[in-house]
Length: 386
Image 1 (cartoon, rainbow, N blue to C red):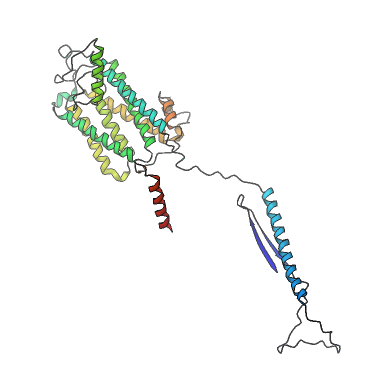
Image 2 (image 1 turned 135 degrees about the vertical axis):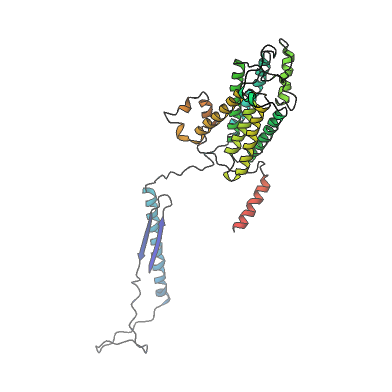
């Protein structure tokens, strides 16, 4: 008989095929037969002696020899397999990391960035309160000449349009952020940029205090050494969000540069960056809100033109620098990367150190489903696959 066996090794891909052929030599060959069933006879006159019929013991002997032969074959195959497994060379195959592992959530870093932005926004209200005491009186220092004001007359309701557009853009971005799959990474980028831009604003408006841009502006009276009154003004400014719509922003001095320009521009940049291309209509609508809001700041004569220009430049350049380093991983270790010389590069490495690929634009449900619902969903999906 013939026995065939295949030995496979899942670790290194080696296999051995063993073919064993055995012949049963104990049973005598059958004599040739002719058509009528009678055996042929030799040409010699003497006929061979007649063999006795086989007994039951003789019939069992070939079966035992077959079993013993199969047992020996199995032992040989097992010994070959064990030897190959002991002496084979293992080859380590590098498997690329999954995309999910290259985009870790790290919510605690997002929390740190949120606290950083929250602290800077609070600090901004303190600086506005301090600078307000230094703003010169309109009768002493008239508004500085501005080329835009020379050609465009003031429209009283224009600044309301600016704040309404800003609220719409911030609301749209907040909803979009909640539906992003990688909201933790995008969120800490947003918080860091908000905090950094407003920190720059604190520096510029503190070191240079400009007079009011128009005589229409009504500033709250100065408190001088009234610390308690200043604290109440800070709390009032925080509670109203620093908006003229809420009546909380009655202080002057926070002109260079425009905080409204920062929020209008930054909201649009994040909306465009983290929305798919097929939503071009949505991106153009947000661009219109941002651009019209910035123009209305100038039409309302509530900021100098230089305030808006510097606010736009600071916002766009900081956003583009940060995302250039975040999306181009070769720059992080490049010796000639001048972007790494920014003061916030160590903070960037802290926030983006484990983000090893570009963040894809993927949307998901902002609310996690209960475990029972997820289990039922998997059962339904499994049934569909079958």
